[in-house]
Length: 169
Figure (cartoon, rainbow, N blue to C red):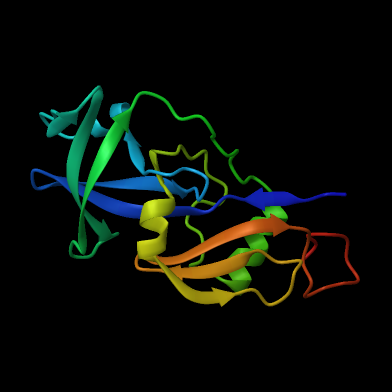
């Protein structure tokens, strides 16, 4: 059976020394801590880690929804690599469905996106809201966060046109 998995991604603005940058973070409840890739942090002008605890270097960032004022301050460990990277969503039928049904739901469709870091379980409990929207089990779920909606889950095709093959909106 055909299906596509939509990973839980969110785009936020990180600000370091008054320099803002959009980053894409994956929500991962299996990761106990959040982190940012060192290669991403090094894009900030004159970036140096803000402090070190043991072997781990940290960057301190203000965090904001994209194009909004900062709402939090995060101290993120810097890592050299990312273990789990989801594949890009290149399914044109899935993209078309969400453009029509939820036009602002997921800004990463049909992009070769990279993951800049992870929001782990400790931070997830703070940023995620109880508001969940999932019209039926064949569609991904939408969950409200302090940064906006997060779309994730398995896409088994479109339920709005059951007479067509999976995904045939």
